[in-house]
Amino acid sequence: MAIAAFRADIIGTDVQVYARQLYNIAINSKNFDEFLNMKWYAIWRFKEVSEFELGYTILVYLSAKLKSFTFLLGCTQFLTIFPLYLSLNRYKNRYKYIVTIGLSIYYLLFFNMSLNMMRQWIAMTMIMLAYVYLKDSKYVQSTIIFIIAVLFHRTAIIGLGVLITYVLLRKNKREIFLKFSTKRYNLNIVIFITIITLLITTVLSNSFRIMLTNLLGLSDYSTYVNGTVAISINQIYTDIPVLLLFLMIWKRRKNIEDYTFLTFCVFSNIVLSQLSSVMAYSSRIVLYISVFKMLIVPIYLNNLQGRLKKIITLILILLLYSIYWYYTYVIKGTDATVPYVFANF
Image (cartoon, rainbow, N blue to C red; front, side, top):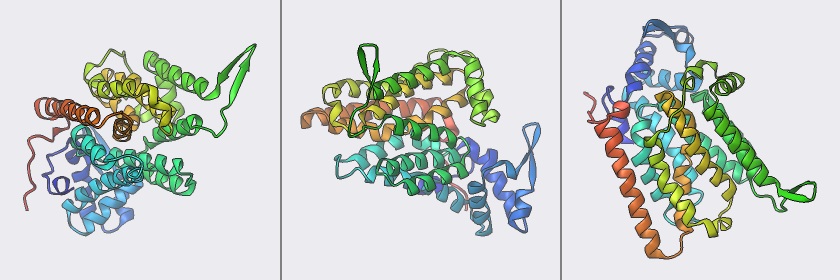
């Protein structure tokens, strides 16, 4: 968290795009209402403070009154990492080393990204925590966490879709079957196939994607998904270890609680990640599912048979993700976080 807090404001593209701008405006504002009504000129248009979600603007305003930009960056990372830790920690008695493995995956795949996409990463880890509470039938806590997520990034409404999918796919004490003619079909399997089919349609049909973003009230983000889809090898790369793990635990999958939902996360992530070929920002949509990698990988690893097999598999996964980290963040310079620069005090 200290790395995030004490970084220079050139580390992470969005720090300069909006975090520093909002902070400077808040410093010069007499009160919160005045702050919300302020605006600045950026990229051929005026941006208003009120365009940003209330949760984040409150955090910026409090940081400005404390006269600490470091506090803003540190709190932003805390609000990202703490919900993630709570989510993983609730599984620690069922799955060995889930916190360590989950956080390792976060730092290799997502940490640098979170230094850029600050608001959305708060929302995404909040959605994961909302899922954990929902899974434990703590509906009030889950609802509160979801509302907080929306207060930091409105795309959290996509996370609501993930939560609804979990409710539809979760294992019931008694399996429900649909009868067509002389054949019977498991309801969970029917729902699973239907959802995956809709997701494939979303990827293949540009008009369907635009219609869906408008229906979800996310028309401002429709340009993120408008275009032709092509296969994105870079996105598939991070899914290969998860897919191989899925195949390795196939015979033992029913021992995993909510295995149907986790399977949905694996395959929907592969399908939707191809949207990144339309526009780089499109990959932000699938991140609400990608974030579950930090749960899926350690859960799948724990279901492998044999200690040596688990250790070797874990080492190989971390090696592959380390290569991804180096290529994505160091060589390509994605999210503008490498080389790291400390803030001047």
